[in-house]
Image 1 (cartoon, rainbow, N blue to C red):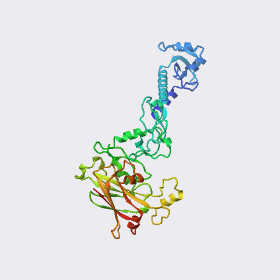
Image 2 (cartoon, one colour):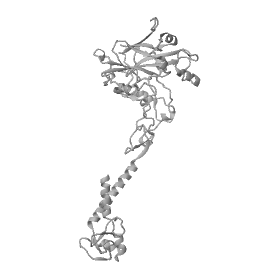
Image 3 (spheres, rainbow, N blue to C red):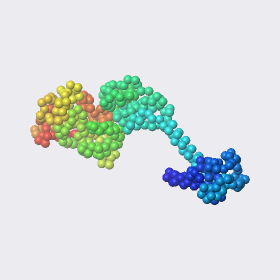
Image 4 (cartoon, rainbow, N blue to C red):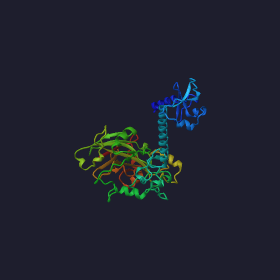
Length: 425
């Protein structure tokens, strides 16, 4: 673009009129005996002939009759001869300028500013050459990625009049937790459930592995993260974005020990304690979906499983409207030993994988370290990261290890924590 601009500028300087110092706007262009140019406006003003007679003069005849005025530069007589080369250059410059203006005008007319769900940074985006494109309905499984659904009538999309309620009608489906109902314009609960039923088994609340495994992204279970992670990038996401979660290489039917400190476990939402990486072996590969095994640089052909932990108060629900701010502050302090305003706090621990599979089971065990008299054991299936990871929902389903306050006081050692034994079968 810079080279083209310089060439056009130089050409217009060469085509300037010797009298008015302006570039000629069009033919005819006259010259003097020394070759200096003069536009037809100046020539018509200073010449006795009219403009019509000047335009009627032909170049083929080679008319060399002089006019009654002289050139402003060399003082030579200005001839009635027209410079064909200068006129051709002027025509080409004007044509290029007209085409450029026309293309910019067409682009401006075709540009429409709409509220589009494909823009993740701003509610305004630009769509070109698509006046009759039917926009798809807003999908709830995309979580917070597309917050602004298209509501333009020209694209064939009509949002519902009344927004749907925010509560989860199906606990097996994870719906985004928006603060306001304004983000639910265009949200269709029936469409979301119909799309999700294609991935869920008819007789089970877990994902069906009989057909093709789902390739939908997984929402990160870490609190305040909530990113949509690809199935093949789950291990890399934890290693780069959550380095506080240690990766542990384990094997099937081999016990692994994890040290858990209850004081750092939050209330009412899960915390990732560790990520278990199980290598791909020949024996369990027939019963495990191939999509669960991830090829990563640090754990090649590994099955990732996330150990989740959370605290739950059975008497005082922190999400209840009657709970005061002082009680919430005390509950967030996380001191299990000095606790007067809270009764019967529970520690919930569960194991979550990419997809729920009835062929893989886990055993979670906590034992009193001093006397080995008391022990709490859970054996059951691995939950899915595609389902809701809310502590209350996991506790109601029962796929977790539950430790009440009395047992927790006995198993906590001198270091302020306890050993968790995890076995994957």
